[in-house]
Length: 309
Image (cartoon, rainbow, N blue to C red; front, top):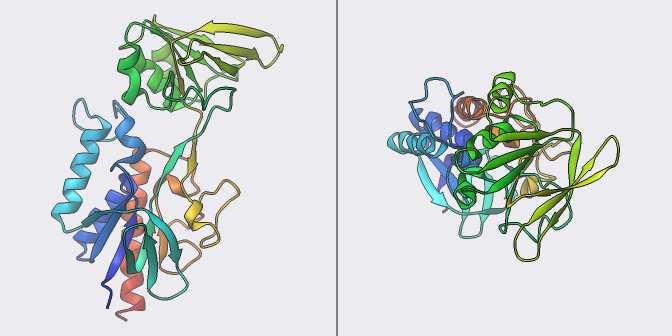
């Protein structure tokens, strides 16, 4: 007979690790499944200045290491596996992985999101050859070189500032005439002598045979094309939910975000979602961690009512 966990958490980012901590601390038999590296997008973040109470020089990887140790100390079990199918129809939920099949009374989906593509010509061909989606991962390759950052949100501006530690110059390309990022971040970026901004523009094409050599920019108001000579291009234009395996299994919006209530319940009893995978207005480490805590607490109440009542 298969082992039935109280809860299985799918995803090892801040939401999943927080859920693991809260579930295990409540004496729930808890398994966390992660298909790749723990931490998700967070481990690609160089500085976490906006996480309340974070230690000095707090990096994403340091915070994730601490979160994982905490969850482990309270009894969360960890396994590496990728879920390829789910059956949420019964009281006991069944998860089919590439390695094993798992059963649980509750499931917390915390699979997160992945970077959205910029959508310009030759982007895929030059990915990893000058086109990147992770400044923390690749900044060192562009020491004393010229790079571009595409985007205007918090991630784009944060990463542009980080890249100035390595690059000779950083050109931020934004399709609007104003940034969406926090004013404090924008002020910091504009005050940096290494950062230049091209407003009202999009990237039409990445140029280069084996390695990125430049970008073709298009002004969205005039239609005028221009060339920008860069050695690197970092794309930060948002994220898409990693939810393919759950389509048709839980309610989603058109984008693929899982819809939950304030207590992280999906439309399927016993199935919860937390973090960037769900429909929400703010996607940050702090909101992911809060989601995880709420999901685990709600799952505990669900088990008490459903199985122990």
